[in-house]
Amino acid sequence: MSSRKRKLINKKAKIEIDRYPLVEVEWIDIVSDASWQSLKDLERAEPAKVITKGHLFSDVKVVKVFADYALNEHDKTKIDEVGNTTVIPKSCVLNIKKV
Image (cartoon, rainbow, N blue to C red; front, side, top):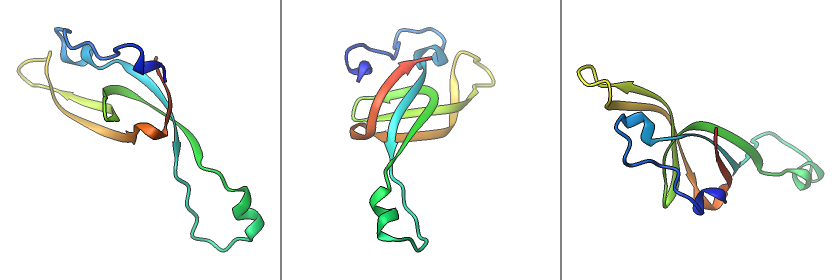
């Protein structure tokens, strides 16, 4: 994975959102199906390859991404809250690249 070779998070940024780069994470997700299907259909079933885009919060033990954020009312350089978060096991991540 490309992110293991270089640091993507800029801990020295003066504006907090600039610490968290906009990234595209390619990863493998679980697929489940509660409907009746033939054994041949099940044999052809595969996990889903998905893309998640957002700001990279962390990629140390797991990959954590957030899509939305609210700035502090009094200090627009600080983030108060984040939303639309995704936490992905690193073993499922195929690639992380800056957008």
